[in-house]
Length: 308
Ligand code: RIB
Image (cartoon, rainbow, N blue to C red; front, side, top):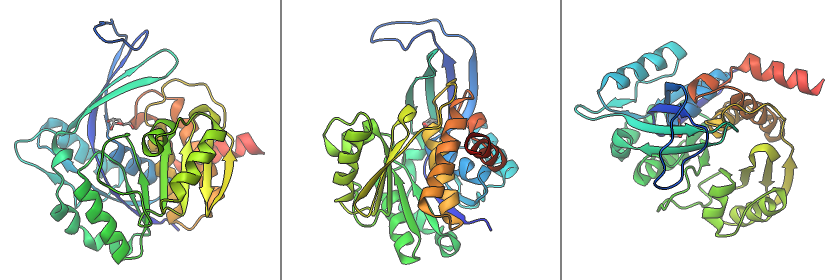
């Protein structure tokens, strides 16, 4: 039985180039093929959850340019409930510039555009969606006030709050008991703890520190080293599922979407983490954000193939 997840976050148009290396300050580089795709952490995660089998409501703020209309078409095609998506007249949708090197590592720069003008009123108007949802998923690419409003609605309707504190940024949004599950990568964990976080041992220390701020569960994703999870004060290392890396863009979004979808349908945390890990691994094998988000059948076939 699918669970219902509400996503509040960004929706972007991504411009992706493959480069022989990530340029340094002042350097120009001739890139390889160019790919235009759709992205934004909120939208990626919503589509990842939808493909992983959830009923999904998206609360996003777009502009009214040609890309915005294409993004709305995409939600229709993929079956994302977009009734609370707003298209702001005369504005542009968010934009991501993404460079990907031959190892699949990337550099991402985003201009928030319409995402930066999501209002608490827009989120408040989506209260009916919170009545049937079991999970709310947030990231850090919309104004703090919009995220705060979403958290208040989630608390009002006993909805589990998952905060993906990405990208690392200065913010007034507290990581406290209102956040049920916190998901960060190593650099985001460093930003929140002010300690170096590299590898499972340091991640376990950081996860305990972050858990002490209030979230019952803290997940630190470690790329090729899996993830560390701190649940009710107990830490555990989940190993990676090794794969050939083409492009790491949206691996975290794929992970978060699958995590939200499986938790919303009532899966226990360790099994949900296995699904999320598989979704993240499958994502890095394919170029781009949207094209790389795997569907439920692919996630299950991959888990069966690797673990039977
Ligand atoms: O996580 C990847 C995403 O980050 C990209 O799609 C880009 O748009 C930025 O939001």
